[in-house]
Amino acid sequence: MIYFDNSATTQARPEVLATYKQVSEKIWGNPSSLHKLGETAWNLLEQTRTQIANTFGVQPGEILFTSGGTESNNLALIVIVAPVLFFPIFIHLFFSASKYSQ
Image 1 (cartoon, rainbow, N blue to C red):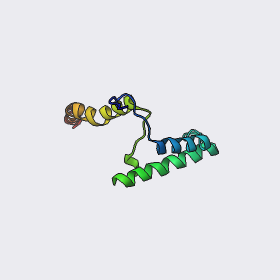
Image 2: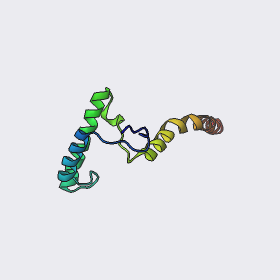
Image 3: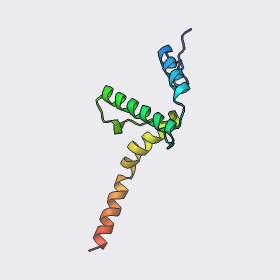
Image 4: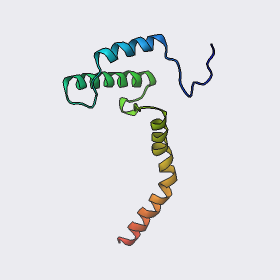
C-alpha cells in the first residue's frame, strides 16, 4: 500500500517502534517529576536533546520537544511571527515612554 497522507499520520519505522517499546516499558516516569523514575526519564530526555542537537549542529537549548503539531505550530507563531508583527508597537511604546520620561 502507498500512503500519501503523512500530514495526518505516518507509520513509524520498525526500529523506532522497538526503541519506543523498550523505553516506554522501562522508563515510564514523567521527566518533570522529582522522584527517581522521573529523574531517569529527564536524564534520557536530555541525552536525546543533546544527540539531536549534535546531529544538527546546534545547541541543546535550541531543541524543543512538543506534544504534537498544533503545539508546534502555535510555538512557531509565537516565537517567529509575533515579534515581527508587534515589533513596531514595542518600538513606538518604548520611544513614546522614553520621550516623556525626560
